Length: 101
Image (cartoon, rainbow, N blue to C red; front, side):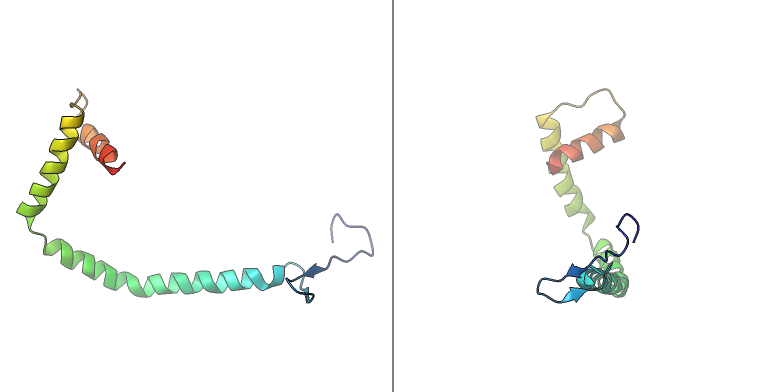
């Protein structure tokens, strides 16, 4: 092993007294890799259904109600801070950012 005196072997131990395989860190990396793979696989399976739900919900939005809700939010933000001379879109993004806080 580089950086180690000749004849010295490095031994890792798990939480108990069982020796672990060097570089394996008690199997933690293997467990993490399995968990990450399971997580990614679950999202891969769920993604099409989630996208279908999103599309369905966007199609079912009552535009008048949504605009009324957004209008109240924007009105309150403008009331709290007057609009400046910057372009409208930039200013709107700044207002939305402020509302998120």
